[in-house]
Length: 144
Ligand code: ADP
Ligand code: MG
Image 1 (spheres, rainbow, N blue to C red):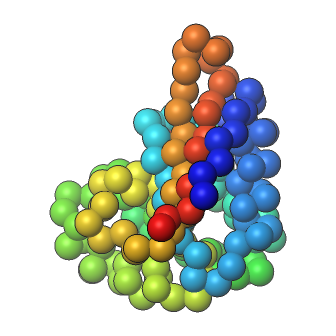
Image 2 (tube, rainbow, N blue to C red; image 1 turned 120 degrees about the horizontal axis):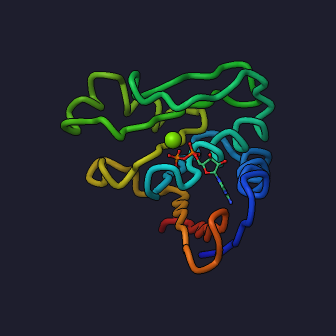
């Protein structure tokens, strides 16, 4: 199933994430694709809020994964932008998170395509300059 949404300000992207977080189930993996500054972290912040996490969510660029245990479900936020080799993911215990009972969110998932789980919710965020600076097209697809 594939759904396409359009947002015109960060709050709307946050809200889409919020809805996903409210409905998230144990073991769910969400992958996020899109260029730098497109809104992946904004979306993730909404998901965290939907999971009732009150702590601020920042991009875990230098640690690869940030773990939040205070919400309705454990939340594992990955940003793999700086990954050199997929083997680095083994070292941080990637599989334990992704095949565990929490909700995993992976920014820049396309960089670790070969180790993504078969079942996942794929979110793609794109700009379209002809529609304005704050416009985003957000495609949410259930795989498979
Ligand atoms: P990424 O994690 O993809 O690199 P961020 O979420 O950190 O991007 O940043 C997105 C930036 O784009 C923020 O500064 C946000 O305010 C801005 N922005 C403008 N319009 C939107 C929109 N419709 N949805 C999400 N973010 C938007
Ligand atoms: Mg980010």
